[in-house]
Image 1 (cartoon, rainbow, N blue to C red):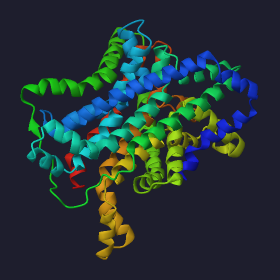
Image 2: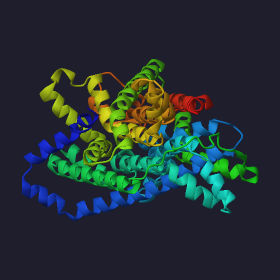
Image 3: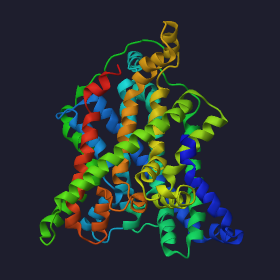
Image 4: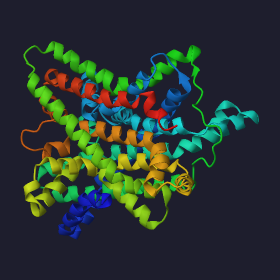
Length: 493
């Protein structure tokens, strides 16, 4: 079912692709501009993935191994950049540094808003990682760094790889930051071609190329993941990881943890607040703000639950089985996240008007679009969490007299619940800031915080946009704070 949902945009692209003259397809593919778009897209994706892998893994390590003043508020700070729409962050930076455009600002903003994609799954893995191998390595004379690299890192590598995959797909599909910074990549060119009306055939061809790149990224991640199994096979020494004070490194560690949040939210929000203070002509409609906030929270929660339920079968299959069929299902589930929101939205407009016209511009179609776009986040989290649970545990529970459902609930699902919570958080926060699909598919009069922010920033009404941007941050803090509670993790131990 999940694979069918994710394949809807591909069906649309296939239908439209077959309608295009083969000569036009070849002309688009052989253009120098197409090659330049591919190089820039891959360069930006690789740079952001490498940055997020390094910062996200280090952030997760600090949160689980270092004791800092403030407790779990650091977890909230680590998750908070997910609440920052790339276009809001880019607008804030552009207001702070006028004329700044190109690769560097695009890399900076996209890295900052994407770091939690790596931090959250790695954090979940580190909290459940077996500390005994590292202690044995230390007792054999290895340094703390060498022991961590050879024992703990392999345990969290699947989560880090899954998070990096999401980062790569997010960067490939982002339109907000690259459009504001005028850095021409595939999404920028596709949206421009669609909006020109006369270049939509070229846009379809470019979208198909983008899907091919996304499939290659997914295949590369599967290859890097390998066939190794990384679950614990015995009871061993299972206790909470030791957390030590940072000492003289407290301030540098705190600054490091805050850096993504400052880049993604701190500076942009400060710029918007400054505009709000300077702009005395606008008036805030509190009813409109509350309605947009409620709409955002409700539709995000519904989409997150739907995505998680659809991701469970693919995630479990990918964690437990290998083979061409499983690889095909998993790869198909990831493709929607690499498509620009405008392509997914247009595919649903095209298909809904021809198959179920009554659902056109309904909440059902809107939630469906969110699931297509963000299903990969849920799949990656489910796969990473279930992959750390030994498959022998439910078998042991069955041998002790428990039924299939009870055995799985008390072993696999109990131990993987942190990752499932992280999946729900990821989808919820990402849906809150989604823009292109929301603009095209939302019912008439159904406004979200993202659409309100965009409508004001595009009109240069930055002061009017500030309350909506701040509201989005506040709404995003709530699920992040819930996930940061120690009891949310203790139940899995």
